[in-house]
Image 1 (tube, helix red, strand yellow):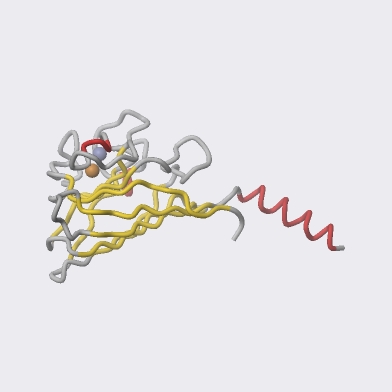
Image 2 (cartoon, helix red, strand yellow):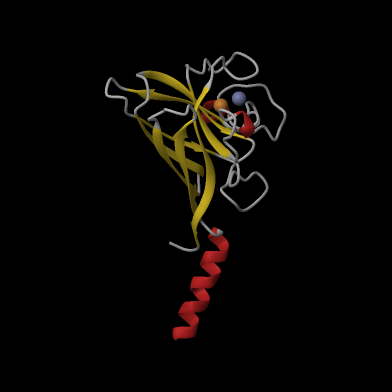
Length: 174
Ligand SMILES: [Cu+2]
Ligand SMILES: [Zn+2]
């Protein structure tokens, strides 16, 4: 009986895939920056869930993307461009999907008068670390200005004010 239950458990885990979770700790890119943030990433049946909380950010809307490389040196220029596995134009991956925008085009984070902001999006077709279009080892970048979701090549969002590499912190059945 016990073996049968374990067998069923293994079968159901294999069917669901190995859900995994990750985090990117955002840090301000300027030497004296107080900007901080935490981005939690999780594989869900609907796609990659990305939930961010930021503090000490100037009020307003700020472009928010997955960039290609997990490096934040040189004011986050080391992060490269927006993650773009399908060679698309810049846009809105949340609304249009990863086949009609850069896959890393997560939109904007709205920051209130206290300097705090949060955003929660799900991107179908991306995963944290299993499959083809994975984001672990890439980075999350917060920008100075609003991403207009249409200007090329990056939404006219200005400088990269915070950045953090995406790390896998947990995996397995939940
Ligand atoms: Cu960006
Ligand atoms: Zn883009």
